[in-house]
Amino acid sequence: MAQPPPDVSEDECLPEYRHLFCPDLLRDKVAFITGGGSGIGFRIAEIFMRHGCHTVIASRSLPRVSMAARKLAAATGQRCLPLSLDVRAPPAITAAVDQALKEFGKIDILINCAAGNFLCPASTLSFNAFKTVMDIDTLGTFNTSRVLYEKFFRDHGGVIVNITATLGSRGQVLQVHAGSAKAAVDAMTRHLAVEWGPQNIRVNSLAPGLISGTEGFWRLGGPQASVSTKVLAIPLQRLGNKTEVAHSALFLASPLASHVTGAVLVVDGGAWLTLPNDIKLLADFESFSAKL
Image 1 (cartoon, rainbow, N blue to C red):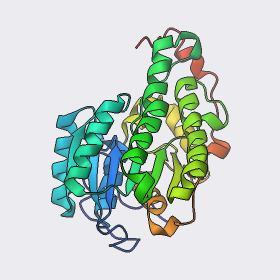
Image 2: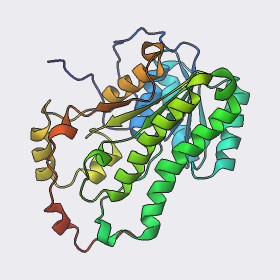
Image 3: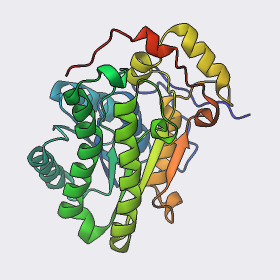
């Protein structure tokens, strides 16, 4: 069985890296990555840059992406432009894309990685909390894709990879907001793949499972005993890591996947097929309320 590639839990670059793909796979390409300042987005940026790609990393926190950009550029020798934007605000996205195009002259790849999530029963989930997750995950993905289409992809082609999840494939306790949002994004992936294919734009989804070293895992994994039970239920018997997700994004964004569009690539060790859905967790969150 293949061993997972090395990873680090913090938002730091890998101390060493062994190329499994051609080192110049994305040479001189430019990737625009929302949520690129931390977690999976940070590692995707790093792995892309280690394969010759320049990146734009964007999030609401300019200090976070600025620090991340310095780390990424120092570790890889590639250019990394940090930008502040809220994916819920099309004018902010437009300004950021304009700045990126002024800096690099093109954008070849869009990674929609910005997301929001937490555990909460549907019965205590406020209307605004549900809307907030839908706005960030679903509307944010459409907003950014639509702006990139208008500004560059329509006339030059491009690749979009939407980071989603398998939550909506079966109905997961405490996740009606995120499951609904990500399921909508997967539907959007298929629609955009059909409509934008004639403009040489490929659109795919990438659905990670339980990934170690991410804020999502710390916030959503639940009690340690619950995590241990979940790991034992995964066919590959382990958590995934951020480098594995980044390698999958690299495949989808690269010429290796030149005839792949409208697909959902699940990267979870088979967990979506076997992971238990613990109804008892509802009792643990009986008094919890999300009122964003």
